[in-house]
Image (cartoon, rainbow, N blue to C red):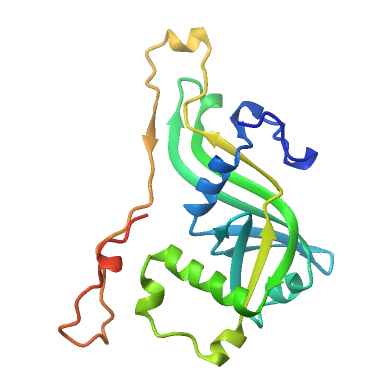
Length: 215
């Protein structure tokens, strides 16, 4: 695992022992994410927008309507900060100051670029199949107008770091000697049973990629 951050602004300063800079950990956190947040400036004002991310190689991607203010601003290249957070648990301590969260998070800095032509088609197919492998081939292909109405943005993962808090914080010896309970409650996002569209005709079976959907 690399011991140094790729840049000063990605170097974790607070709780630096939680930092990880290896791409294996970073990629796994991004690949497991259904939601990311992108921060940027528009007309001098800060804006943070939620989006659905996906990764191909050394780039993280997001998409939306070509009419989106966020994507129009990012089309020509815009400095942004992208974050991903997975909440894994709540840690309870013997001391009030030591209560904490268990989490995995990524922070990435970079400059956006638009993805066009065949690269956009490849990227969007990868996004759909990330949601559920086989979904792209199952669904109706996009029309030419739908392709035009969508915009894909990507950012190279050059300046990126992660923090992983997967254990309770240490406690003072005096607190350990008390009879107060300490531990943690795991948290996870779980998929429920598929719910068919009310307009779905009878006799249409649930596809395997839906029946087997997992997070």
